[in-house]
Amino acid sequence: MNSRFRPYRLVSVAPVLLILLATLVGGWLNGIDMHGRVLDDFTNEPVGTAGVAKITHGSRSVTADPSAGTFVFPDLPRESKVSVDAPGYLRQGVPTTQEEIRLAPLSFTIQVNEAGSNPVKPIANAEIRQGTTLLDKTIESGNKVISPYPGKDAKLLICAAGYDQKEITVRGVVATVELTPGTNACPPLPTPTPPPSPSPSDNTPSASPKPSPSASP
Image (tube, rainbow, N blue to C red; front, side, top):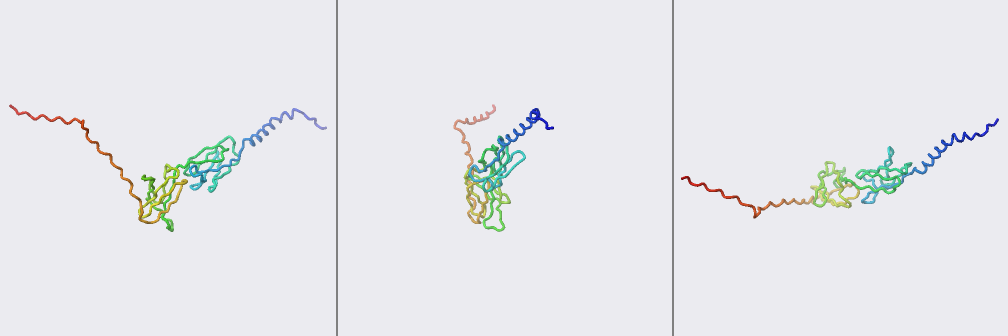
């Protein structure tokens, strides 16, 4: 005998169907594949010369293409944020709907080597100057991290004893500089002028003369 349709059965499964439908529709409406590009805020060039940019959401992360700065981060909540960071740059939090991400430089790493040397010969104690200010000197490996960042398109003078000096323009957060052996070494830095000694004021009272001893009677 065929069982007759019972409406209460449909009523009992309706909540389950509604939950499944809400989950599917909610995931379709709220989920997003994030497409982005990470750029240096000063140069408009892709971030990646000092190390790839990393984009993180919770326990998941992806890295940007170092040559183009582009990335795709699949299946993210639409109403959420990701953190973006890279070596030498200030970390940022941006919404998943943002396509262009600009990172501000925090430091500048410089490597100084002797030009034409094979194997590579790092130059220690090379001075890194900005104008008349000595920022720092390289260590034994020829490397130095300059922080804070010297500034957009800043000019730096790199010089060392026994080598010709070289001026560079700061771009990005890392650079390798080669110095040629020569005699055009570091120019002298200005000597601080000592403050003038204070001159005595004309209104300064002079010491009272001491009375001369009187003769005894």
